[in-house]
Image (cartoon, rainbow, N blue to C red; front, side):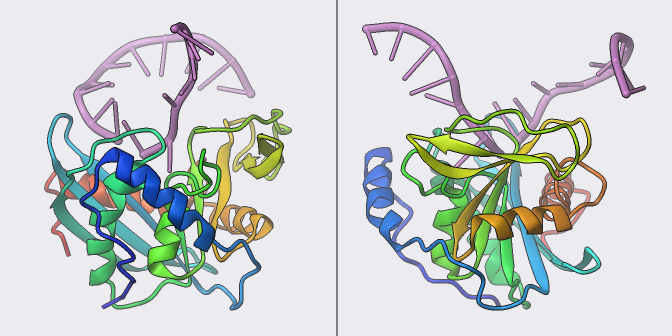
Length: 229
DNA sequence: GCGACAG
DNA sequence: ATCTTGTCGC
């Protein structure tokens, strides 16, 4: 079973959550990878509108071939609501349950959301990275904070996202003439590597394979088309 | 005070 | 995120 560090309790109020982020942000390290990447994981959650039951899942892929190595899913319940800026408090608890079921430990984890491209520089990918203590980054479908110039229309083109004068991530084109995805470092990884990994996870869709596969997994789980494995 | 606001 | 068919554009 894959392990992680429970740095704090998740049963907090929104105000306490913000205080925790202010405390945890100082532990985030943006640095080059220390080991080559062989496997990369994608994670996501799904749920029925107005219901507290959440379906969380993680899919591990071999980076070189993008073939699925392992999958883990769980049916849990979310207590924290969705509040912009506090997404990690709603999603990470159940994702950790799925993580604990993995027998392989992914080298890097891609999250469906922001890394440091967050008002307090600690989005779900950064927060998750601290718990998992391994390289993580965020690849979001929309912006939380920051501004950027539209990148060129070709796949691979990107432009920096700026917030209060600092570069917090990049608007990256993963496919020709489609809206960009927003990539930012989570923890223990640098900006350029996060972009490179995102492009290497190309399956022909705008959404990179790790996240796309995880999305498919949790939706199948929610529809009862698959078992929590 | 007003508007924005990951999933 | 989720609810949902057809439809505009390359």
